[in-house]
Image: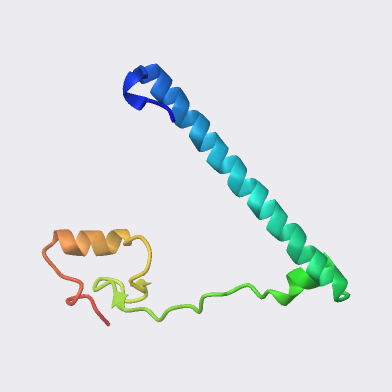
Length: 103
């Protein structure tokens, strides 16, 4: 076991880099082994890797309905997701709340 108290700051930082690299390498090896295992399982059952990839559908997010509208220009709306539009920031700076601009 390593006596951490006896190591200098430089040695501790190097040790941390070495440990981080070892963890990353371990995770990469485990992932590669798992992928190989899944591909072998699929091949044994007659599926190619491209067919296997096609079985996994990408999850798509449905568009959200707008929850807020710009009081000065009702065509500008915001769903409440993501970064606040500038008109929302300006309305809040004027003292309005999100409830005030809600649709």
